[in-house]
View 1 (cartoon, rainbow, N blue to C red):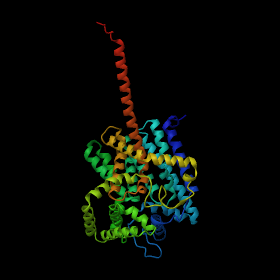
View 2 (cartoon, rainbow, N blue to C red; view 1 turned 90 degrees about the vertical axis):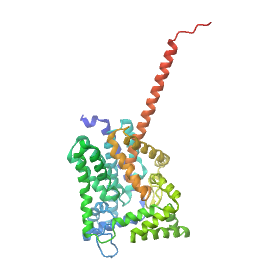
View 3 (spheres, helix red, strand yellow; view 1 turned 90 degrees about the horizontal axis):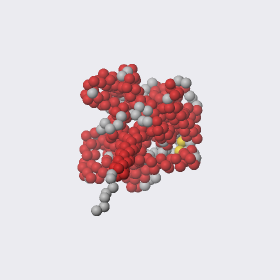
View 4 (tube, one colour; view 1 turned 135 degrees about the horizontal axis):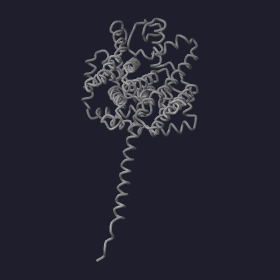
Length: 452
């Protein structure tokens, strides 16, 4: 029997990956998504189609002029393009895409377990494997033509590759990890500053490891740098900065999500509030200085209210039900979900709904104990990533859909936090038992007191 077969963590990885794929494939092959090419998905498909037909990255559709733009990131449309080019039947293409994304989702579980096995014991690794495999948001995500599954895969593999490269001090693995983070940045620009900033900080803080940090910095900037050069030279249409400004303004309104939902049903108050928000967004896109002045004046008029709003946004980001979506764990209207019709799946999901806030708190605890040096330092990059993502989306839009690619990192850090907490309680319990045993021995060995 080989060394890998004798390693119990290897079996955890294999079983968890297989179970994760089965669950994701079960969902995508059973559930029915109504009009799957809509909203963001329509943009991604338009980009992919223009890449194939015109070799231009453009969101143009319906006969509009095909001009290069950078409004959305190129990673996911590039992933879609081969499927559109090679599979002509729309139904077969969609099913194949869903299956491919189910596989990416399963491999995301593999990557996080490869990462977590560095600092978790076997029992906690098993708990982590179960949660990674069965978490409902991760099961439903592969059904949609959206970037969350691809981004989650790239982030997980990048974290695992960098961790391995740092541990082995291998330049090739470090470069591969940096390039993977660059691919993640091209899939969602929120990731673009992460590794460069971390690498620059590591270069200054750890002189003995500067070679490693330089490799990570250069590799992580390579692909986003080429994309930035392309945008500077040839992009003519809407730019990514417009989308960032839109998210910033929309995210500053506590009423945005509820107003958007109300406006869909024609509620006059919801329609009026949505128009007011859209007006400020249009102003900021058209005239950035005027838009930022309008935003800061509004925040300054009610500082207490907006301070409370921004303080609540991290909890909103990691909450359960998606808001700019169909709701619950479904981005688009979804029929015949096996997570609803199967009793075991339904009861499991209800348990996870109740556990979700606990997982978030334990993840925060895990991040804190790693940052302050009370847990394994190998988890540092995962902890920093989770805190970074939370901070960025708390400034922009805190929508639970945006947390889906990072649920794996949350679960891994929650397991670390729970392991640290349980170890602390166990230590206190042992000390208490030792104290009681010492006290009992002292009492039993003492000479009896003589009566007067």
